[in-house]
Image 1 (tube, rainbow, N blue to C red):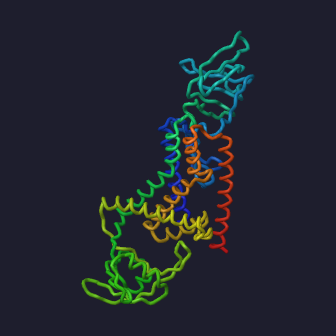
Image 2 (image 1 turned 90 degrees about the vertical axis):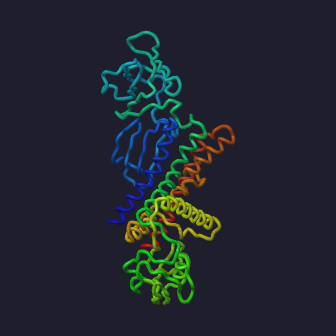
Image 3 (image 1 turned 45 degrees about the horizontal axis):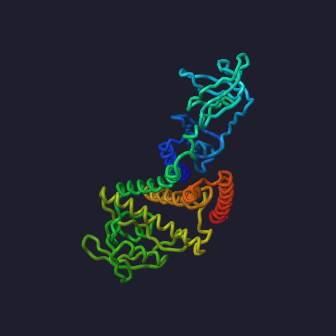
Length: 419
């Protein structure tokens, strides 16, 4: 239950902040955002505010912001159609009733001759009991009502494609950007609450069931050598421990000004590279500082970003196999392990996932934010946009390949954890 709750909270936060980045900058650019969704599939909960419908959907596999103009309008009105019109106080059309007109007796029924809901915002139509063609001005925020569902019209200047290259690029880039911002914020709060690790071989918190506690090590013990090898930094300490799993080591420590010797046998575990390493269940000593916490958030976010790019480079060059990738099942299990180690470990894990989500989305692959940015960049170079139909085909193929990769990775996760 703790694992499931952790997954819901972490992924809900990661997806929310990512999609909120898209939403905020799209609205700043004047783009009509029809829906802000967490999850996919059938709607579980929804409400509308400021032109946007906010929804939670059944399948927690991501989220999306549906911007006007990104996809063809689902409701098409052609000449010869009979529609119902309702008007606002200024005499402009506020509602266009497409079907079920009998449920709207106050609507004026007309036969469409010409309709333009993008640029001119007019409807030219005939009324049975009147002679001549009538011309109606449409309000820019009018709704079309189809099957009793309202959809706000999208004039061209409210559509995604009407905005400048820079505005569109920022609206797309903002999603991954917010994941980096979230990681920084989580790590900053972590440092404010837990303290900033001191880069020296002094012990902070000790896991009660770890090798260090079993051997009798205590908080604030400073380890000056292991098996006669001098230590100065925390990295020196962890490097020696990781290299000697299940091997008895002699720790020379300073405790209350006195030098003592403690024998410790590091336990064994697998690191993210699936390599065996030793660990004793200790964290570095910490100090508390507001400025230091901000610096820690920046440096740790940069470090995590660098490590993920390094892993991606190894994947491309073949030094890192698909077996080392984790899909939904693997992430679920790793989140459970992090949750069992406490809130601070879980916070660092959430920050790493947030950076990872930001980086993956920026890869120049179809169907990802990076792929969309690539097409916007090509438009900037060519001076004209790519054919939307061709771009749509590329994104569809890319999405299918990504889903195939997800299935392969998930199958590997099942083999590793359950078979």
